[in-house]
Image (cartoon, rainbow, N blue to C red; front, side, top):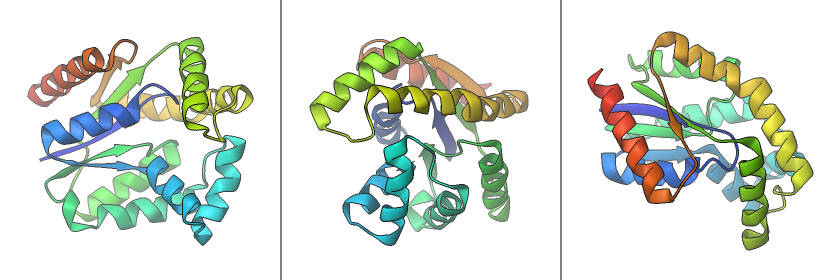
Length: 192
């Protein structure tokens, strides 16, 4: 069983790598970003609320995010393991996730951090915005999201580093090249 999460700044390739890890390890990938975007597209009450924060480049509040993650982790398809993408983003969410897992007598096995240079990420995300027309990918919002990542999410990374379950992987390079680095890092972390 593998219970893990993938962390990295916006544009570091988390979603792409999460899909590949999910396929290779046979665990479900759970992306809070995808869930938010689906709710926005469906104009659900959660989606309407989440869109306000997403368009400003802010994090969706913990109260909304935590409930969604708790509900998702209670579904049957996570039994053989899971990969969380985009959660937790704050130390308060780390504590909440710890409580969710403790309720099921579980804990995380590995935390994978994709690393990348901010300027490379801005360039990457601006290119993606042109291709997809995402309203939350303009330079001001991208830089704001990177600032939020550095201010709020890096303490999460530090918390997992202190627990000895953090593995860092360079997220720059071709997709296949990064995937090979990621899979090797997971293998090493699981045998450590």
